[in-house]
Image (cartoon, rainbow, N blue to C red):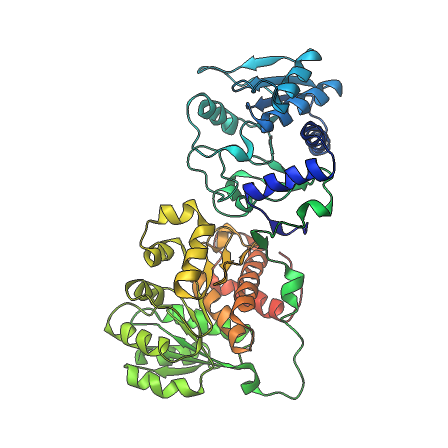
Amino acid sequence: MISHDLYTIAQVRRIDQRVIAQECVAGYTLMQRAAAAALALLQKRWPLARCIVVLCGSGNNGGDGYLLALLAQQAGLKVDVLALGTAKNASDAARACAAFRDVGGTIISTHENTLLPSADVYVDALFGTGLARSIDGIAGAVITQLNASDRPVLSLDIPSGVNADTGSAEGIAVQADVTLSFIAHKCGLFTGDALDCRGELLLDTLGASATAYTNETADACLLDKHELDTWLAPRKKNVHKGSFGHVLAIGGDHGMAGAIRLTAEAALRCGAGLVSVATRGSHVPVLNAARPEFIAQGIEDAQALEHLLPRISTLAIGPGLGQRAWGHALWHTALDAGKSQVVDADALNMLALQPRQFSTPTVLTPHPTEAARLLECTTAEIQSDRFSTARKLAKKFNAVIVLKGAGSLICAPDGQLRICPWGNPGMAGGGMGDVLTGVIAALLAQGIPAWPAAQLGVALHALAGDAAALQGQRGLIASDLFPHLRLLANGIKVNG
């Protein structure tokens, strides 16, 4: 297994079964290994803890918890177990529960008015990856108390209440300080609600050998910065501005010049040789004064845009475009031009009304609400399964998709999927998407194919945001990314 490979619940179960069958390791032995790994982590992370409470469900996740409680008690810690339900007879979880009882362990059965015993550390071993519903009732009441406590929480495998495949939490979910995942990384822990629930994420493969993973193609992968760096080779010396492409940024209807300026400047900062801007004529003096390196063109109709297109290599269309007649005419002309392109913002909203499949290299960069319009559903449905959303969009439009948000997803038309592990909440502000559009367009213009260009563009954008956020997330603005983007695009390390 490669550390950035991510798997579905079904895949992890198959890997687990291979470990048991091929390596002659009993399921109970894997449970013991998980408990030992959890105790070692707990003692390392919270060395002063003397009293722990383990919340155990009735399944294998609960079995991990019972064995952790047994080992913790043998290590001299004061241990209470809060049991939610009863493990099935003859199961590994039932065996683990019995083993804890056999050493004199105390098990408290939960009821509607159960109060959490005090503890230095709480351990969440309630539901694990098998949960496929929202949590309510007694379990919900217990988790509510857990989240309200001021003590640290360690979740085993996954925070209870989080869907391990999608990352969504339909109802209440445990808010862990640390999550120790077992066997393999689960896809859902890297996007959506999971990022607010998992805390620090660690992995223990429980001694599984590499052969257990060989027949499973990872469902998704984290972006790998070392792999992406191969697309940022040093430039040759005998070159000129035409060697690095010509981006045309199209947008900026009345009152929205700032959006298209951010896109155009991002394209410059990420190495496009030339950047032109097709916008309202009234914006040209302002753009020329702010950034004279642009070739700002006042474009009032589609015919004027057509005259620019022959010398352009890549389009960045949408920021500030609006959805009135002017923007609609430019949208039609641009998408019919046969250029590589990044489509964002209002250009996506128009695409939702007039869908098409793209035959030229195209990257679409929707946020969840734009994605909902493109798929004719609700934003809540998009967020409930971001993986499925990205794949549906890529297939529907035959384009590379960047589904923005916490844990941005990048998806190819064939369903390959990557997740960005960088970025921060300070980037949730106006103009950040406009900058991303310019970054990806610059990479396309320099000859990088759409699939790696989208991955690299998302990575550069997120890493620049992290570097800029070192001065604080609140108050971070889109243009704060520019100096960091230039450094990163040249392979220069920045703090972040």
